[in-house]
Length: 293
Image 1 (cartoon, rainbow, N blue to C red):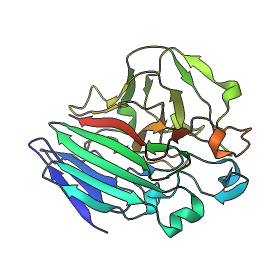
Image 2: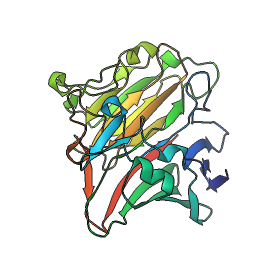
Image 3: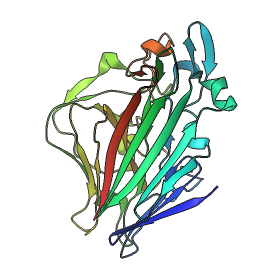
Image 4: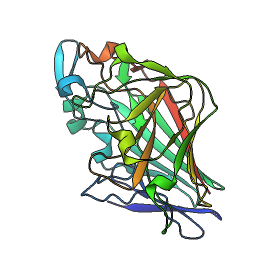
């Protein structure tokens, strides 16, 4: 495993080759904004979710009557990514098909993760290339960055609030806490998605909304000069999550291009709710950004 560093006049970012995972985002004052992966609470920082997001119903799926097994969020987060290129402010890592991946996922692909610093913002792109010659490829992808809250000593988790902009009515998609699957039969409209941060906010697992346009999700406090703003870019959904009942001082803001299986899923990947389809040799681009102040 290798740790890569990006740096400009505003931020220093570290990324591990394992899972292409961002493990640190610090400003010039040395404030750490990323959760530091306490294994007793949640042992990750910001995993990349591919080729599924969330849980499959009963942890398996079918393609053309053949069964495949895959656990929550897919396999990319546990794989070594290769270095494609690096400069002071830009890093490109990649993952390609392997014998091990073909046992879980029958498609030939190349996944590139692009990290680029622009002032106080870390811009992130996921480029998915289908290397199939004759058939369509089906996949989901998502981000799962966890932010350390509070940002500085002397403050509490409950001193912070979450704000979602622009202000509009959005569709809340419930998650079954026992199975991790989504319940579309009980989705509902929510006029205001802002809320005071508390561990109990996540008693029913992640809070998930459908997206129609780029959305900014901000973690901030009137007692702190620091804040995190995640812009969802072209994501289709976003989730907000923290551990419960085990309490950790972090919160995840997760832009997704895909989502967990429905409660009544038939386990067919090609017709999975929220799935993406790529024609042979086609490319898919997902993008979002993280800004800190």
